[in-house]
Length: 368
Image 1: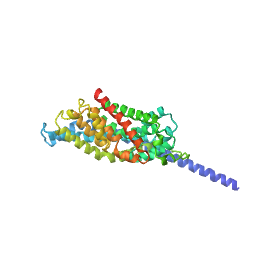
Image 2: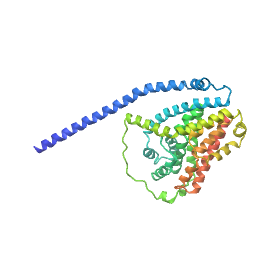
Image 3: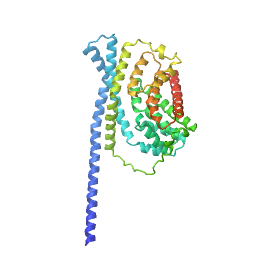
Image 4: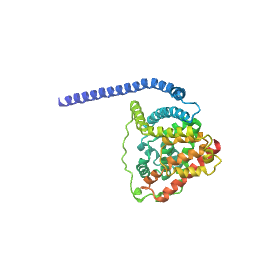
């Protein structure tokens, strides 16, 4: 009798659990469908607004504000009114899409993918995964330690650390919005090439003994934490959270960068920058890299400025080399990495990556 009662209880519990699971699945599917139904009209509204920005900026500048067409101030105002919503709208859309993509690639999963890979293949994988994996300067040390102690080769680890901050969705969106897909595509290709080749070169130099001793004494744990698969509703929520987090942090840099760019656009004479940062000034590329290294900014703040500089005669390769140096070789990152790297390895890292950026700068100046 007791066994029969226990069996009834187990069956009832299983039935209740099954019903609860089905209810949760139904709720999740309903939520995903609701996101889809709201998303389609939202995309239509986004497109209509985006295509209306150019006439809107002219209307506000020359009709509503009644500014003289040829004045410097009017040019700066039109530039600011047009570029600010344009860049923020592009940024929001792409960050949302990349946020959904990133829900498939956690840092732990990335580490597992790269662990044990041969260097050449590992460098390629690491550079591409660097784009899809959340990363900032403050997380450089824990990511570095996690990769090295998990058996990821040193050169592969550096490919990831170079690609992640330099070739990210913010940089690509801003470049596409301000320069078009050709420049954005070339930046993507050359940025990945720098990350792959620099990481491969550092790996070939065999500089593992230049890691700090305490790093080599850490052994990665063997615990395999199972990662739960997210539903599509959760991935969409992850994308929305990425928009709130990333756009919420960088929008002020976008606005400030566009404001500086608007001032340059309106008041710096045409061709003025050609003598300082033009193709004819061969020394401008290495000088731009040297100036960029001590500075610290992100793509959101620096790209609108280089857009305005190019309009005034600066060479594309020179300003992109400057931007790469600011983002990929920032002094704050070097200070943080000093916790795990000896000075010789840091100097090698800066020298190899800096050489790659120089080549990219001269290449852009030749091709564009």
